[in-house]
Image 1: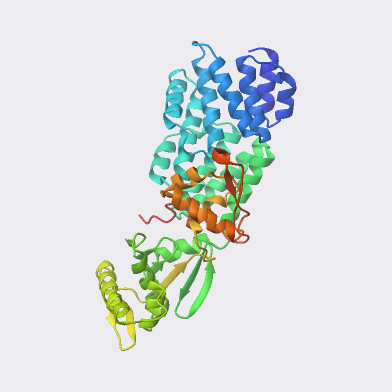
Image 2: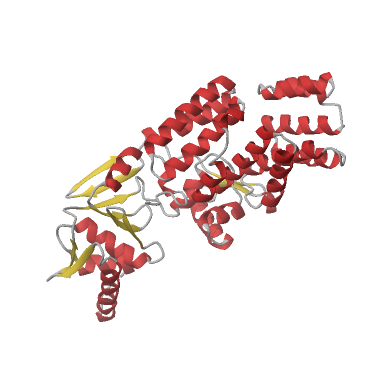
Length: 406
């Protein structure tokens, strides 16, 4: 490595891409192309960065397996930032194997870290935890250590382990401060704000209040019967009955939970579950059928009793019924939650993260765009979607696999 390449690499490590470009901007050899690509990535020109890194990977000779693997690693990181979640994960696995085989332990660990970030974005929390389970964080430079702790915090937040998330964010803040990279410090600060902004809305016994993350954790750990409108489930004491694939049943359960300890009138149940404005005998018959299905689904934790005017929810062991809802009720909330990270997402990446079809996601984006909630830029395959953040509220509970209860 010549002195100009070494100086450019030191500048990039310190977060100074202009100093790096001053040394290698006019060079087209493989190491210079790689450093130019990383510099362009730091400056925000990600498409140009990907082109340069791809050229660098092809320019390295057959004996340069490690530099080529590092270029693939950088390309994978750019793909994550641009939310290109469909990139070939096998290339990252091959790069990890090459780096580990040649003793580049730090970059091999970084490859595992990138894989964990991708799993986290797509809601695969178990895979993310396995990817980082045995990583030696001491091998990371401060910037990478801060990014690693952000992944740890992200997993903890999705699993509602607020104490673990707070500790990870504190470590991330220390590492980001040591790295002295302003954009990284800002990212950690933004992530930390999630713990201090309302995450859910709790209703029960005629009252309503906003909850922070740690409050949500405490509510879910209580003995109350909880109708969870964040993840469309009914929960009690660790038992969870998912109604995510049965929206009519969940609408009935939520209406009954909001009416508790009183009953919910039949007309109200029909309006909430079926959108019925003019009730006839067929609606009443369908309501009886769906109430029977709901009674069978939740029989482990509650019964549903018919009353003169409608139906009432009767907990089997709990002394109270609580309804946990999003702080802001918004159609297509899961799409908005992903876009709220401030990055530009493609339709295909959103579909992959949500486990939905691209056509379903496109319809949701079109509806949100008509209401001014999101906006596109670019054309064709380069089209991306962005949105301004929902001020004052965290959307972490709306993300995929946000509240698995173990």
